Structure formats: C-alpha cells, structure tokens
Image (cartoon, one colour):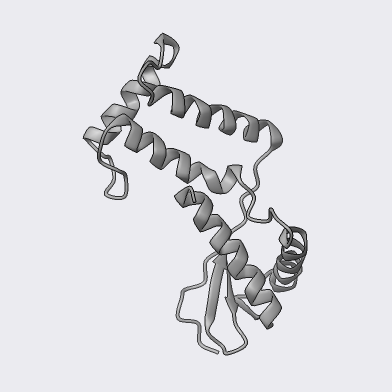
Length: 149
C-alpha cells in the first residue's frame, strides 16, 4: 500500500477497515513532577490574566500581553492577555487531561496500547472497527480538552 504521508519517526499512521487513514497518534510522556509544575503554571496563567494578578505574576502578565500584541508565529493568538492565557491553557490541556477518562477509558487505552506495540517500527498498521473507534474516542477527547468543552 502506498502511504500518502512521508514516514515520520515516532508517529504511526493507522488504517481503518476500509483502508482509509484513521488518525495519527502521538505519545507524550510527562513525569509526575513535571505534571505538577504544568498544573501550577496553568493556574498561574489564570491568575496572571485576571483583573488583579499581583506583583509575583508581573512578568507573566507582561509576557501574555506582549505575545497578544505581537505574535511571534502566525499560529499564535492576537488579543489581550486573557486571550493568550486561554490559548496556552488549551495547549496544555491535552497533557493535563487524559483522553482515557470515563467508562471506556481503560479499555480504549489498552486497545490503543496493543495496536501501538504491534505497529512499533512499521509505517502503518491495519486496525479493526473497535480499534478505529477507540482511536476516534481518544482523538475527540483530546480535541474537546483543547477546546475547553
């Protein structure tokens, strides 16, 4: 089968039962200590973007305002400090909120882990309907977390 995407290290292309592309899965490993720091940073973003951030958050508040006035990259938001803080929080949400929460979380995690273990070192792998649905649930969970819904 010809893959329309160039191979990317550590990113697997999953193929559905119909041969169509399902989703790219990327694994992010975060140490527990780093997770605590990221959660603390997310809280600091909320406070820095608020009406009275306090002197301890002055540098972060200024940075949020500067990024909103002059975005460094085209994909960065333009707007006030609250807009930028929301964008950063949404970017962090896929790390801070597991896509495998809820009643189908553990089985989905196990299913996708088995697929990834099988596919390690391969460019693509065929998946059955259950595996495709598990990948879709994980992807939509991450999208909802990133959008804050």
